Image 1 (cartoon, rainbow, N blue to C red):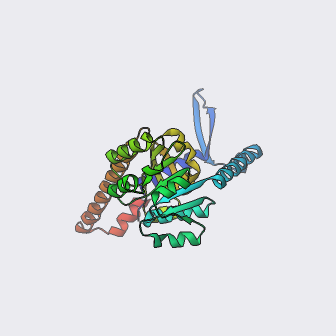
Image 2 (image 1 turned 90 degrees about the horizontal axis):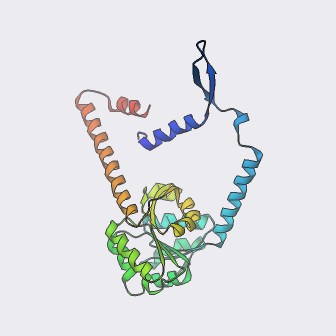
Length: 273
């Protein structure tokens, strides 16, 4: 598989960040900036920096141990995400429409509730990862749903892939009962979810977003805060459109290479260089 544009950019950034620059003047007195190779051991973080980083990690661990999170929806993505939370020290209470899907999570320490309302009542923070907009709305508005127990002090984080209008509707209902809301659709599929390598496109209540960072750090490799509710859903749609266009162009390129009598393997080798 060829490298994505993001991977190539990350490699370029790494090379740039790990080089030293030296300023000197040539024979005419002009200033020249020259780049050296990668940094040496003398450029490693100082002891105080290392100690500060370790203290931040300990503080994050303390926050995790105090954080009880509800999780609604244990499909392909939800199961992987909730499992990562458990493995990283979170106390997790789960719900799924088919309760038997909770069994494996229970074996790893999760608690189970029979309705979304019970999860909301028990947990200060609840994450939802549902299959589609209809399921996302149903969990919130149906009998024994989120709205029956959401109140001041409770946070609801919907990471399902839904349209902006659905996110806005859920946000209005949650905040109307005194709760706080963040939408957080993700870029990534099953494997990134299992590896905690999702990209989170969050929007909504800024304070709730910041409080959710310990969980987001476990679920993804990068979290973006995009402002008002609806922006996360819109960004996810745009990302999907761009990725789809890239895959279409890639496929057409392979076909064109084949029709031109060129090796597709050579084309792939060229693209990854």
